[in-house]
Structure formats: C-alpha cells, structure tokens
Image (tube, rainbow, N blue to C red; front, side):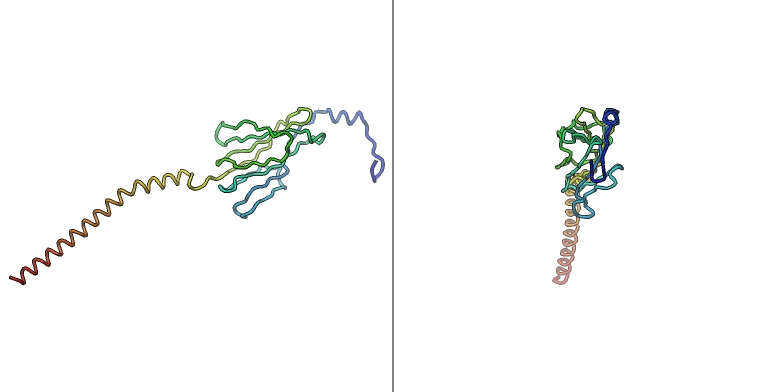
Length: 193
C-alpha cells in the first residue's frame, strides 16, 4: 500500500513483464569537464540523449561520466566497461572493466579525436546492444604539435641563411668604409703634394 491507497500486484503479469526480454539500454546521466570558453568546470545533465561532443584543452584533459542501465532491478550489481575508439582509424583500446562503478572519472586522456564508448551488463548478464558514445577532441599542448616542430625546424634552418646575409651586409659596409677612407687618403695626398 501507499498513502494514495492499496496497491495490487498481479505476480504473473509482473513476471511476464520482467521476463519479456525488453532490450537493455544504457543512458548517459552526467558529463563533467573543463570548458575552455567558460574557463571553468561544466556539468551537463540535460539533453544527453543526443550525441555529445566535448573539446578538452591541453591542461585539462579529464572527463567525468555517470551512466545507468534501463533495468532498475539490483542496480548495485550492474557492470560497466569503457574504451577509446580513435576516429578515422580501426584502432581501439581494450575494454576497461570498472565493475559496478556507474561513475567514471577519466583522467590524463590522450590528445586526439576519439570516442569514449561505454557498455553495461545487468545482474542477469544481459548486455546492452547499443553502447553510449561521447565524441572527444582532446587538444595537444602547442609545443607537441606538428606546426610547432615545422616552425622550429624552419627557424633552425634559416640561421645559416641569416648569417650569410649578415656577412654580406658587413662585407658591403666594410668595402664602402675602405673606399671612403681610400678616397680621403687620396685627397690628403693631393693636398700635401
């Protein structure tokens, strides 16, 4: 019963619903990450039924996720796993089993574009068919990017060229100085004679 009245349960009907084999689903309840535009941690708890994309700055490559299964019986026995799937590559990491922890704290995430994929299994061993995905673009520190290496290489390669230009300018300056002094000496010689 309840404060609204008596509750009647038909055991046979409840058993049929329980054993009907409804498809098990996994839901993303919460995402927490550092938002570089807002310059603070951001907590998303709404509109998580749509695909979620997150951009992580180099100094804050962490992510907190909370997931749940559609089966609400014995939730403490639900099991979860996650892995990283790189975009544009067939490469994926191994599944990381996190037991019954529905809250994942992912720290020191690698730089790049990839999906964090989470799957779950209920207490009966039934696994979700459709995993939840979070699209990640974790940025790299500027000094580890290709364009930075190219810029450094060009700077190093341009040093001999700059030195050559400097030597030519110095040689030209000295030639002008010698010719000016020579002219002065010739003028002084003319005055003396």
